Length: 457
Image (tube, rainbow, N blue to C red):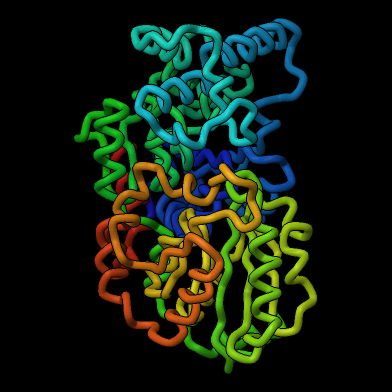
C-alpha cells in the first residue's frame, strides 16, 4: 500500500553507475515509487548527462542533479572552505582512512603498489601520518565531524525537507558531505553496502547509519568484525540482482538476442566476460590468443560473445581482435543491459572470466564457468589475474570446485571443452556455493530492501 504522501520525504542518493543500475534495474526504485509517490526524491551525484538518463526512466518523480546541491562556484568563503577541506581530505580523509584500514587488516596487500590506477590500491594515498593505530579514530572523527565542508545548497535543501536519506553506495567519497550534513541535522540515514566485496578493502563504513543493508551473512559479519557496526542495525536482504535471474526467460528471447548480434542461436555460445583495464591489463593478449585458436578450427563448434566490463573505456582497442569476426560478437559496455545479461546467462553454454561479480552471476545461473588465473603474454613476475581473486570475499569460491581453473591457456581450452561436453558436471557444487556466498535466491531481495528502508525511516 502506498504511504501517505504527506509523510517524511525520502531522498535516494545515487552516487555511481553500478549501484544506480542495481536500484533501477532490479526494481527497487519502482517499488519505492509505488510506496512513496511524491514523497520520494532521487538525488544523482553522477555526471549530469548520466543522472538525466536515469531520471528519464521515472518521469514525474522529483530528481536533483549533482550541481543542484554541489554548485560549481559557491560563494568565496565557501570556496575557501572547500579548498581547505579537499587538502585535509587528502591528508587524513577518505582515501587515507581507506588505505590505512586495508593495510591494517591486510586487505589486497598483494595487489597494492605506488601509483596504482585504482586509488584503493595505491599505498601512497595513505597520507603522511605514521601508521599508528590510535591515530585512526581521530582521523575518523574529523572525517565525519563538524569541521567538514558541506555546500550550503545541500544543507539548506536537507534542512527544508528533513528527509530520510538512503545511500545506494555508502562507501564513496562523493557521499561524505551528505552523511555529514544528515548527521548534523539529526536525520535518519540508511546505507546500502553496494557489493559483496565492499566491506573488505573499499574503505571505512560510516558508523552513523540507522540501518545497514547487506546481501548475505558474510557481509553482515564483515561489518561487525572490521567496522564495529552493531549487528542489530544490519539487515540481510539477499542480492537484488538475483531477482532478475530468478525469473525465467524463454529460449525465444535468447535466440532473438543472438540474432541481433549476428550470431546463430543453434550453435553453443561461449561468453568471455571482461574485467577492467586496471585489473586486467593483459586481457587484450588473451582475447587475441583465444580468437586465433578459435579461428584455427573451432569456429564451427561454438560462437564467441565478448562482454567488456561496464567501466572499460578502452574496449574497442582491448577487444579489437574479435571485432568484425564472423561467429563472434563484442558487446558495447553498458550499465543498462542487465536484462540482456540475465537472458544470456540463462541460456548460454559457458562463461570464461577472470574474477569479479560476473563469476557469481555465472554460478547463480548454473552456467559452467572457466576462471582464468594467469595473464596471457605478461612478463615474468606479473600476476594480476591471480591477485584479483586473493581477497577475503573470494575464499569460499576458491575453496569450492564450482568452476574450472585455468593457470595457462591450454587449461582455458580444456575447461571450455569440458563445459561444452559435460554442462551438468559441477551443477551440485555451483548450487551449493551460490547458496553459501550469495544467500537466498527467491526473487524477493528488492522487496526486502524496500521493506528495510521503510521500516527504518
